[in-house]
Length: 108
Image (tube, rainbow, N blue to C red):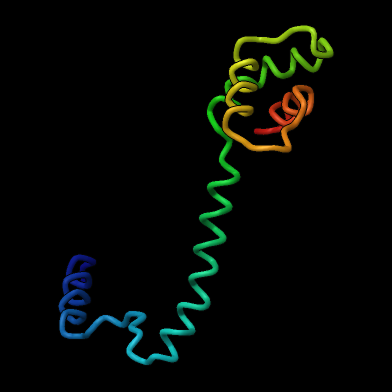
């Protein structure tokens, strides 16, 4: 039998059969689905939002390395912008400029 004939036969055979999906007709099954899926979605979303590094920090990695290497003497424009963004966006307790530079340098 040719491959296209097998595909047509298979598709025609499946037309009359209902698809099996995760239907929550049973309230207990629905509650179990909610208690197992909802925490996963919440934790995954929170992790994705908090682990995302702002673009201001990504572009300042080389300036942060220069800041660390010069022991705080040289402040590049990109690092200064990242530092100002950090100070205006995040609340106390804030990192020092050296700690911020080390965190930026360690980030991917």
